[in-house]
Image (cartoon, rainbow, N blue to C red; front, side, top):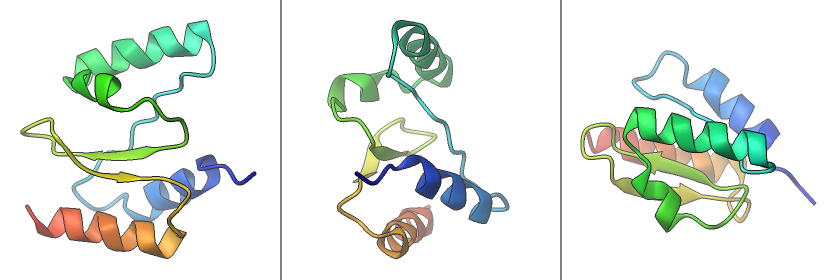
Length: 92
């Protein structure tokens, strides 16, 4: 099964000069889950934890409103993900 991790890393690198932050919230174990919740609370996006129950999902969250503007997963190709990220950035 394909993993989202390598795609996430590629996207993060290619958008490093854009006004976008890539944050990984890992829920694979107790320790990583605790850290993920703490990170989400610090960023003010803990509301997305209630919305998202799937793994291998990239959530696009508006930094000001803290609302999810799009969800990306492995149904999308890397190019489709880029198109959706670009569309979200243009909404700003």
